[in-house]
Amino acid sequence: MKLRAIDTFVNVRMGSAEKPDYLRRVAAEYFKRSEQIFKDFSISEMLADMDRIGVETSVLSVRAEKPDPEVVAFSEKHPDRFVLAAYVDPRRGMPALRELEALFRSQPVVLARVVPFMTSTPPDDRACYPLYAKCIELDLPVTVNTGIPGPPMPARVQDPILLDEVCLFFPELVLVMAHGADPWWQVAIRLMLKYPNLYLKTSAYAPKYLPAELIQFMNTRGQDKIIFASDHPVLSMERCLKEAAALDLREGVLDKYLYQNARRVFLDRRKR
Image (tube, rainbow, N blue to C red):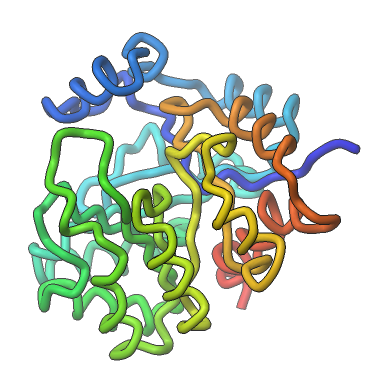
């Protein structure tokens, strides 16, 4: 049976984008494939690859502060195939919120991204709370990187337990842990059991390395909680799809993981 998928973390301009030292180091020292990672993709290349492997929609990363027009062109030309994730630096305060809302109003933005290691700002910091309130107002999910990052950057700001009080204070906020939660998988699972609006996506984490406790959760109470993503081309979407298809999942769970959960949590909100 042909797979269908929504890839919720895709980069198409890593060749042209700014490359901070931590990114160069993780590409060379951690993934050991800088040449494959730092490249740009054309719209036609992406569509051909997506059609070949069964990816219906890709969520492309841009900065809310200064969105790359070359990336925005993907969603403008093919809004049925490409939508946007807007990275926000919450330390910038009200200007960041205005930029996010302006982009949301003009483009198919389906999520806001917060990356704690990039700013050394934990997700329960007061700087993040206005962003959460704005995203509730817009009905826009927020993804927060969790787990020890691959780059040589601070890890403690990405402990998923820091989302506990955020979920308590903002029960309406749709919050998604991104990049897995290694080594705090059990904490992430317990939090997802506790909070209805908390999810996890497996971006930048090869499916074949997902831990047994997460697979067990996906097969039982977590069928609607775990969302597929690759971080293409850091990990290629084709590789991640093949590895996902080989997971020991119960009937119907694979389609939820690859497609249904992402559509419900991210894409269908824009149609309300």
